[in-house]
Length: 402
Image 1: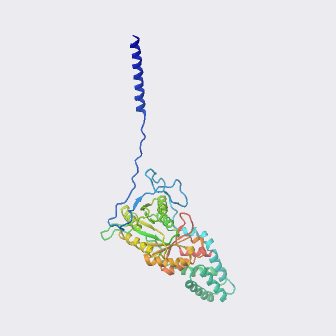
Image 2: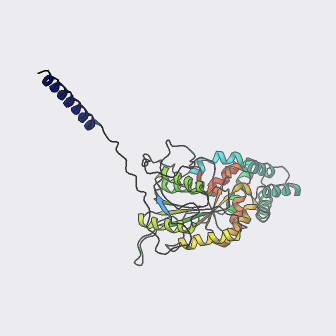
Image 3: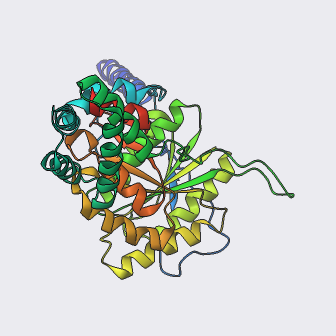
């Protein structure tokens, strides 16, 4: 009898233990793996722009944790990063240059005020006119334009007898505005092309070119903000493939305003990226494709030839409507040498002058226009994301003379 009781107790303990183990096994949960997000990539080009270059891909850039005023390079997106939660609304471009006039006038004060003091002297002798001409040349106006302006001022002051500061300001304003030439077409060719001759509508294409250190990538990002502020849709092409930080930086700029970025592997053929960017712009039906190119010294023939290739390959998808040359206003006359070489290679259609708020050499606006025969279309007046402004000759001159 005792053995029977002991057997029943052992069997009961075994049953309880088995039940407990089964309960624990059912209660244990396996971790759920998050599937990786598949990056968006355009199809391969029908015609390969290069036999050796890498294939370009397009990705939606991740946002920064918090918006900051000046974007910095961001890491490449990973499969677990969140989609863009908030898109910034850029400052409207209308009147930007007027609103930034005080900043411009502070840096240009030596030029404008110096000329006004000279012109309002009681006696305008030969020495004074030479001093006026020297001031203009020092402001990078150029020898030719400076001499032209001095002759006009001498003639008018002789006839009108200008003496007061207000009279001198009115006279100088009129002549400077005429020299900058407000009749030049400064509109950006960024309107989407309508369907015609059986061809579908296609985006306008703009390339941004220049030497190292002029701020091309930043300018491209700011230009995207300018266009989006004015109601355009934009695709960015990161064709500076030799500097990984450039593609990351451009992608960050684009992400903050909802612009799509097409980029390639580091060291990929820049022409391939340009080709894919324009192709992706077609597919997405955007208004404008902006292509950022690598900085290159104007003295390096091979690199300049490569720039021409980028333009030719991009044009396999449609015309390149704008080629904007970014010049650092602080480089002065050396910038004119750069501009001349770039214009020979890619047919410059407009100038973007950066760092114009940090120099008293505002005469470069006149000099570069006369040198290339193309207008200054945009000016950079600070480090903020919305400190790129459409160039307005009258607002610019007013800032010089206020």
